[in-house]
View 1 (cartoon, each protein chain N blue to C red):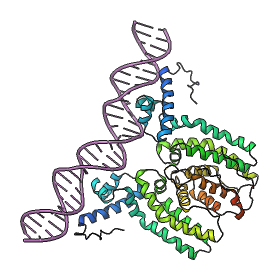
View 2 (view 1 turned 120 degrees about the vertical axis):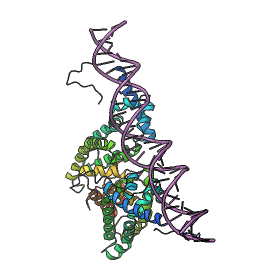
View 3 (view 1 turned 90 degrees about the vertical axis):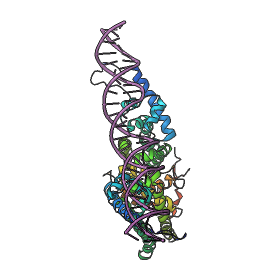
View 4 (view 1 turned 60 degrees about the horizontal axis):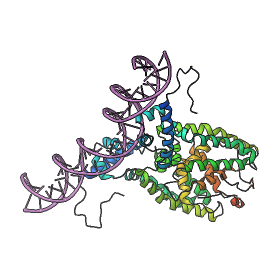
Length: 206
Length: 206
DNA sequence: TGACAATCCGGAACAATGTTCCGTATCGTC
DNA sequence: GACGATACGGAACATTGTTCCGGATTGTCA
């Protein structure tokens, strides 16, 4: 995820100080994200890393890139868990539910991540896209399997489901009365159509 | 909702210009909220109303108060619709579903309102509280009725449900691929216990 | 080693927005 | 018409994001 270009014959490798600063920034970002959330002021991260503002913007033009680098491996782990669960779980539905659980765990344990994913904020647009691009196909695969096995109703869009689950995770840290897992549980229960019950589709009038 | 105090013998009524400005601000806020969303810059509303910044802060110390005044009657209408639907609808479950539909309609047609309700932002904390304080009891009544009639599983918390539905509405205006109604439909389907299908066709939404 | 060019750094500077504060204008009353 | 209470306007300050460029650092080559 952090390689220098290769296509156009890199005449020189990145300078040592640049590499050092990138590492410092990643460490600092991880610390600050954990302490103040992914929406912490850029200045705070720069200060923590001991670099200037220009430096952070040069290495990571958008906040998203920083978040992706910091949490990227967890996103990848989540993506990889899909096919694995499909093999290991007792049924496709079980696999799907376990995967959703894992995703929810990931999102709600990262301070402010749920809010960021739901936000319309420009700086988070690409973060949003990254998460969804990476995970929607995985979710779709699980969904298809469960559908093919007749365990869930058909016609559920993986993108909407992921987005919905992410949204449900919003607010868990500032609202003690709200437990996202309860609502995600309700949502996934709604997934299992009691076969004939698909006769009551929400009167979707987009 | 806009009366002068009465308990401590108001020696003087509010000045005419104050009343005039409050009205102007409300009109301006309604226009700006519709055009730019409930998170529009305060300055924009002040400019639209033709008043200074100090004036808007004096009349409405927080953005919430402005939003509440502008959308208050719709919240009240939503609150009032609960008991009415309980009487008119074919079943408590139908009443609940219709009410949820109405709430979703309200939220997603107000530019940025869903995001504001979900936000952790300080300025929206009280807005959030107002909506929930007003509507959770109504939702709870509908939920109880549907539960008593055996149409839905028990143990669902009205607060969490309202919060969850609000969250699901986030992002609908910036994400063409996401239709909150689909996910709300899934959530409400999850409400219904396993077998007991109410069999009542979806009543037309408001 | 010394010099040079490519690279990178730091932080000032600007923009957008929220919020506070106070000198001044307006209003209502006597 | 005068006077005190009330309300107004917007300057001023704080926070955060983002851009830009003079100057420092690095790597290479003689």
